[in-house]
Length: 270
Length: 342
Image (cartoon, rainbow over all chains, first blue to last red; front, side, top):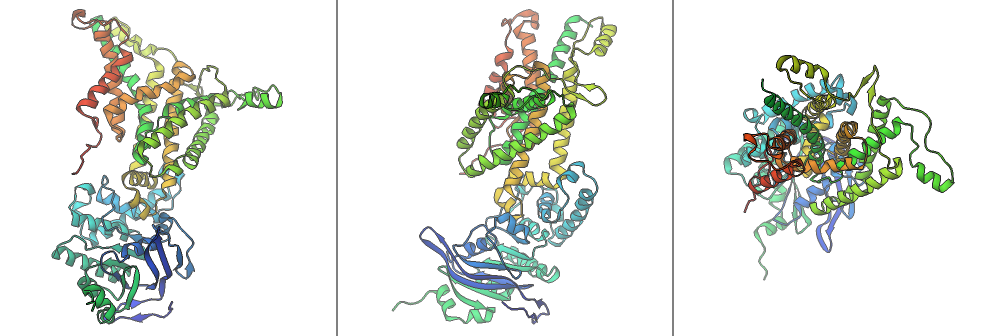
């Protein structure tokens, strides 16, 4: 936990800790997916969680977003210990996420999909909604404007009215990102944002992630197993292997960590 | 205009109006099926329960009167007052929302992620429970339903004389349309427009469609599945109430009312389980189809009476049509095509 801020080499301000995981352990029956892991996420930074396949990265993300409840450990969010919560409650607190295998509303248009990201900001009650007057109408207009900004930003204007089910994979990933970003999240969780993409699409996605962080000041926590991409993007990296934390620090520190090198390249057993 | 043709038109129009009522019942099924994948067998009983509650409140009946009398040896039956229809309606909506919450809280919340057949069985159980519950609460006498809004705006009974007169003056033949059917059609149209507008342009409507599409994604944008399910069951309860009022005013509030659900099944086969426009069009096709079929072949009025099945085709026509659809177009007219990836 730290309360001070610092400025990075490229001039972005990294604020105090916004989320802290303390000694998290997650078990499925007898299998330990995560063993005693602690780390923090600071405001405005890009934090990566990396590790080989099966290291427990996705489980970690699911713990943060409330889809899994850990057996041991505490999650601290904005200086308070978080009680056990349903995923939708975590989302309402301002933690948005994307999924490794994309979870979009396939039957709805791109615009409608991104608008669902704004549900958190829409406060009009059922009655106002039903008669479509006053707050409800004003809100819809305001939120629509914000959503158009996001759609512009992610360069998906051309497909605004297209049902998501008809889009190719790369664009779907971008729509999912737009929906998460539309929520103006305190923390944006990205589960393998580059998975299944070609080099060009990966470069696009990297650019969007950096711009998002820069322009909107969004705190981002992402999971990747492609080391190269992550090292260029992130401010700090957590490395996991077999459910344990084996490294934590700046990309340079992590790259020179012997345990990390071993996990990725394998160790000679002699 | 020949008398024969006017009669055919009359049959056609009445078919359309009957179709609207079928569609109204089918709509309740579609709402719940879309949002939660539950085929709600209890929809018809919900219509019955809603109509009985409305009449019971209107007439100032004491709920559970038999039960109370049996336990305490009293003889209470009525509060001795009459409640205006509008207040009774609002109160009944409240009861239906409470029912929606209870169904979600005590039944389906515990069955999340179960096989569709298990959810279906639960709704069958619910149907029988609700039927018994309605009986216990409001007793099983056949009741007449009259519904009047302030200003003497009552649900009309009997045939529409204006249309009859106009037809008589123009063609020299009368034209029979039931006033109640015309009202039911107008109410159904307003209801459908309101439902579509709600689901397209409001926050809750968008959340409803989101849940219908993908549960996991809905959770990740902060939608509570439980809340949406209660909302959907409430809406279905409201649709059931409207259907119950219309059918109840037509043929009395009695237990056969719950069987209207069976008429909605072929409508769903035609329209598809997931499409609101499908429910409407399916209802109209069934309504018109069965009336015209009866007219043409049931009582042999077409093609010089070559085919005359001797009547009562209305009882089976809808189901045979549904069967044909099952064979040749199982997803219905508007349902999403089922494609299995291998």
